[in-house]
Image (cartoon, rainbow, N blue to C red; front, side, top):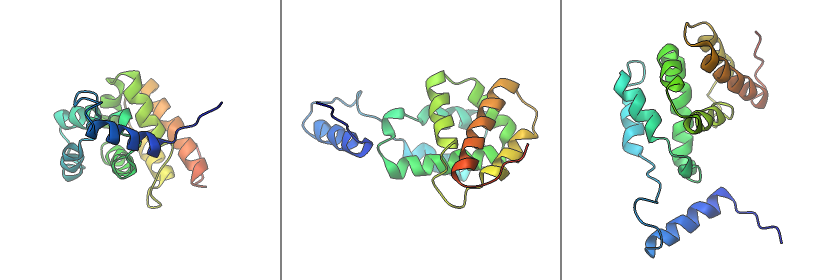
Length: 153
């Protein structure tokens, strides 16, 4: 038998197990909305410690929380557009699992107002470590294809 579990169902199961004490607080994902709110207030002038807090707060176990992940997605685009050099530098220092989560989000914009082509152009033209920058640009290229936005190199 093939059993498929959706992200929403997985999130519901985690919630139910948490209520009954089957999952401890340490196993429950911390979808830190307070960090997202602080990041949003500091867009355009996010300090080094703010990047660390923002990126470290991203938990792959929160993928089932669509409201939280929508906010994360929006903030990733907005922080990348406003401070691309700092974004790339902070991204480079992350473990691969966090990088993958960020790249997945950048390749799938969730809001119609997000412009992958504009973000691509702003990112392409900044100085920074080349390997992580290219990975980010590849994710934005995928986003452009999904949004029917033309990205010209």
